[in-house]
Length: 548
Image (cartoon, rainbow, N blue to C red; front, side, top):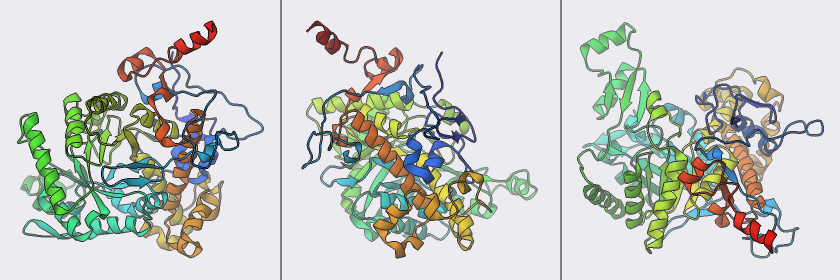
């Protein structure tokens, strides 16, 4: 019988999930107004302290995640080694005084001709037209910019913006898109990137042309094939009949149809209270692989003609054919990054049972991505740097994703787990700075006990406060949203935990991580991932030692 790693309460860390925990450790339903206190939520305030059991000096603790069943990232275990060291920075030796976990370098980079540098190997998922992305954007963008991590502006941002202006069907004014890009660039110091995603409607609206003219190569353009949470176009809900009509006029599919008299009557009398806006499926006019490739290459050629020097692709949890197409076409087009989002990923809005039932689970999809990319590399072909997405939240899952796809995987794409601190910090700021409550979309009238027992002001609550102050200066701290402080603090905890895991694997540079650093907790996971079973890994070497 297996023991669940994630249950609603974790007595060792003193954390608890409000709802049912998913494989990532987050609640399946994550609320912006949550008062705590899952591991990610708590880490956004106390940071590195949450790497360790609580109440040091009066407790001992034991693991409850030893027996594994089924195929999941939790069924992969991290290998440790008893000797050696690899990847020490220039000027450092393999002396124990140098081989300490703070000396592990987490810097990474991705890209072809132009390398995009990052301080930590994490990036956000696509934060698009869902209103929660717009409400908390300042926290998300400033936090990621300070950390040196890429952020993705998702699809449809221009199309749903009431203040945007289209002339002749093409965008000429896009204040919300401008706000998102400018906010990130304000604190950018050369690490990280702002990535803007484009779907069918965005292409029709001329989003790429608008960005090329205004921002040039400051932005990475991303084509979107899909995501792990659903196999249908992007969706949002609106509660205004007039807004629903506006979106339909913009060319979106709106359900139910706000122009039908019966729907309007139902809305007026309260039996219909909201409308769903849907994006279109791409490539519906294409019928075979060759046509998909031709269309894809035309799109890439067009974007390069506009002046974009860095282009990425995001694909979802489709089957092996689509995965192979994404990997091969990205290789041929010399794209800078390919994000592969497995089933189990999060969403702003998806049909629930679709999210539960469709697509290839992350570990299987990512293992096949490694296999297919390795085939190209073995044939001497160009390969595209990969980013894995689909249910990542903690430092050990980041390690496992990077190792499973090594050496091709450079980034781990995280959705909800990087949004949680933005919500939390904004709620705290809304209480401590009441004049800012509406601006930051704070949901609390007072600090809950889960926060007040940590502190009563930002300097006490956020473990990363003074590190941020050292970076931006004391005078600038008044302009840093508390949500950004929380993102910094969470990222610092994840980074420290990742450094510790890498040090235990004797890898002092992220580039040294490999599939040899993983073992499978069961035979089924071994079969699907090709990661050796824990009892077999190194067994021949062990027997040679005994016979020697």
